[in-house]
Image (tube, rainbow, N blue to C red; front, side, top):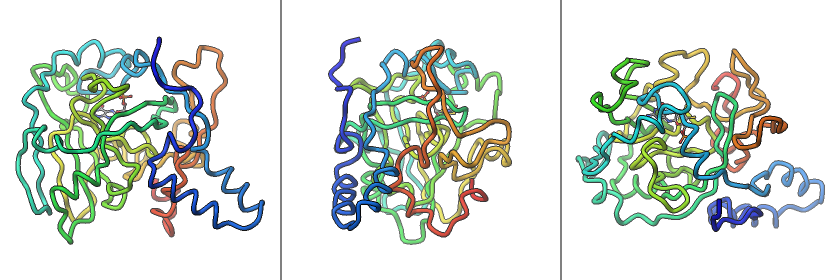
Length: 300
Ligand code: MTE
C-alpha cells in the first residue's frame, strides 16, 4: 500500500513537539555519558515506528458494541450513522451543554501523532492518528477547580449495535482518567487515521487515545464527557476489578492474572515474527512523573 509516511521517524516525529523540546532540554542538562545512556535506554520514543497499514488498523478491532470477534466491528459498524453527532459536556465545567460535534471541536488544531497502541490482550500496532489534545477541549469548556477526574461514555444505539442487542457486557461503555492524565499533552482526541476520518469500527467520529495505557482506556465513539470530583467507574474494572484496574498503565512487570504482559504480538508482523518486548508506559517514559509515589503494582 502506498502512503506518505516514512518508515524511519525520529522521536521529533513521534512525540508532540512540546514534549520533544522538553526531552531535549532534559538531555542537554544531563552531565555524564552514563546518565545519557540510561535516559537513552528509557527514551524509547527514539525507536523508529513503522505504522500499520490502514487495512490492518480497520480490520482487527475491539468494539464490543458491534460484537466480540476481531472482525465483527468492521463487518457490523458501518450501519452506525455518525452524522448529526452530539456530545454532552457536563459536571464541573464552566460551559456545560449538548453540542453538535462540529461546534465543539471545529476550531481545534488537528495534528498527526504516530503512537504505539498496546492492547491488554498483548497485541500491538502503530497508528498514525489525526487528532487534537484533549487538554485543548477541556480548556475550551472550562474545567472548574474542584474537578479531579474526567469520565467518558460511548454511544448506545441498540438498533445498529449487535453487541448491545446481545448484551455482551453492560452498556454504555464507560472510561475515565485522572484530570492530570487527561491534561497530559500525549492524551489525544482522535478524529482520523492516515488523514482519513475515523472508520466507524475505530470509534468514529471521535475517540480517546491514551498511548501509555492499555487500549481499553481509549474509549470510542464518545457522546459524553463529565468532569467530576471522584474516580469514575470504568467498564472493564467494573466487570473484573482483579484483572483490570483504573490506571491500566502499560507495564511489562505487572502481569495480567491470566497471561504475561512482558511481550506483545505485533499485528501485521506475520505468523512467525518474534514477539516484541513490551515497554514501560508503552515507551512513553515522559508520563512517569504523573505516578511518582504511587505503587504501580497495587494501582494497576
Ligand atoms: N470503546 C468502546 N466503546 N467499546 C469497546 O469495546 N474496546 C477497547 C477500546 N475502546 C472498546 C472501546 C479496546 S479493548 C481496545 S484494544 C481498543 O478500543 C481497540 O481500538 P481499535 O479497534 O481502534 O484498535
